Every structure is written in structure tokens, then in C-alpha cells.
Image (cartoon, rainbow, N blue to C red; front, side, top):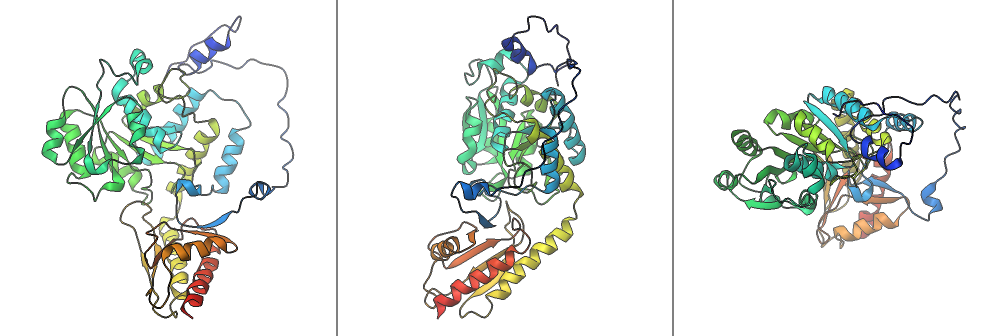
Length: 414
């Protein structure tokens, strides 16, 4: 992290302040002699979404960004509120919060970003530019810089634009031999998509091994891969240089937060390639003091919680749904756990379309049209199957969902 410098406030322009704020924390605060104002009394919470004419819903899907992911625990909301009431030097906050998170998860260093996609951009920029200020200002023009990132062809995905933002070329490979042959003097990074682990011929371990053997930094996108909680440590132990997580999914932090873990030199470089540094590729992805503090508190809560008890609660919710549809003709229901991403208990419900003439899209629309609105897990529209995620539900929601699904399927079977 940048070192502390002092300055003379006389004739200090806004432009000069902005230019320096990203690289040096403010040395001190000007004394005003005035006590800070008392916080205003808490107002009665209004239903902001109703005022906007929007219908909220029970989240029976999971931590999908388009469905606003997760809800903040009260402790996280309180921490963010407290953070919003005072000023702090962002450089100092990034260093302190990153150090605290790294300590909690056993990483060398950590950086809070503006979502997992921003973490991918800053990680890539760290591998391309390092801490070189000229290079940081130059990208996405990569002339004279390492400009290639190697990726499995089957791991190309909608978010790899976050990597391409830095101006690099994605080099696609399919086998370990091709991966090793693709590494050259222009290779800045090797990228692995954890959600696509079952797609492609090169395993995570092999990617990490090739990176270590060649000295090329490796980045794994594990955005939706908490839980299991051990994943916060597993990928760095595996040998990946950098790991990106979403802060607003399983960690239950602010939706617009992300987490980058890994090598200290690369984390420091990632910080320099993002906000609050004005002339950097990821300056657009600003993360505020509230999100930094909120994600730090969310990580504290996550590593301290009783994960076994939480898992048992999810299983009980699933069982309620399974039991509710058990007596409906041709309907079968069971618990399943996805192998990758959202690795938590779900309810899977199938039926005979000859006896219940509905497809997933029909049942899903009926759930949306009812009161309260319910959003199920995405799936094939034309399949006689409905998947329900229970882990983002509020207490008691699973009972409402169970009753509504049973009502819809029973009526169609009559």
C-alpha cells in the first residue's frame, strides 16, 4: 500500500488533491473546533419499492445478481451505517480492511472491489501493468506490455469481458500440453473459471501447477463458490495467485462488493489499478467506505457462523417443500445439491406432463403472478421440472413456497 505523505493545505487545488488521494492517505484532519452533529432520529422505514410501483418477491432462486442476490444481515447493515457517518482515508481503510479479511481467511493479502467482475479487471491489470504507473495509465493500449491471457476454450463466458477490458488477447487452449505451449514472453496471466470445472480437459490443480512452474500468475473466478466456507482458503492453498469472489452472494455482503485474495504484490498492484486512483483502468469501479466495511463485517460473520446448523436448517426447509407435494399424482420431489456454484440444498420437483399439463415456465409464471410473488431457480422453460433454492429465503418463506407449489400442481392435476 502507498506510504503516508504530508502536504500544505495552502493553495491546494481539487485536481492536485484527487491526483494524490489515490496514492497517499491524508496525513491529518483539520481541526474545526466544532463537535460533529448528532445523528438524526431514525425515520419509520417506508416501502420504497411499493412507492416505485414494484412488487418484491420471495427469493426461491438463489444468489443471482439480476434478482439482487442476497439480503444483508443486521450486523452488516449496522456496520455500513456506522461507516457512512464519518470520513476516512480510503488508502488506509483499504489496507486495514484488506488486512483484516486476509487474516480471517488465511490469505497473504485481500482487496475489496466493486463486485467480482471488477476484481477480474483489477487482477488482470495487476498482472499486465504491475505497479508501473506508466503502464497503468497506458492500458487498454498494451503496446510493449505482456498482453495475452490463456484460458480454456470451454471456459469462455459472459464475464470474460471484464478481463478483456484491460486490452489483452484471450488465447484459447483445450489440453494441458496446449496450455504449456501457449505460455510465452507475452503471457500475463492464466485464467480459470471455477463454475466450468466440469467443462474442459484441464483441472484446477493443473492450471495452478503450470502457473507455478512457469512463473505466470494465475487467477480463478470463484464468484458464486461460497459456500463451502473452505473455498475461501482452498484455491490459494491449491496454488492460485489470485482468487475472485462475489461479496454479495453467499458471503451476504453488499451486492456491489467483491473480494480479491492472493499474493501481496499482485493485490497491491490491483489496488493501484483501480479506485480511488484517477487514471486507472478500473477507476470506473469505485468501491466506497460503506461497501469496504460492510464486506469486512460480512466475512467476519461468515467465518464465525455455525455452518453445520445452517445446512441443517436448509435441509429442513427443503423437506417441507418435498412433503408438501408428496401426495400429488405423478409428482416426485427430492433434495439435491449442485456440484458447482450455489452448493447448498435445493428442492427438485418433477411431474408427468401427461397428467399435469404444465412446464416449468407455466409453474414459474403462476408463482410470479400470485401473492406474494415467488421467483424460482432458473431452468429449462419447456421441462416438467421446477427447482427451488431455499437458502436466500427469509424465515417462514419456505412454508409459503411449499403451499403455493402444491396448490398450483394440485389444481393442474385435477
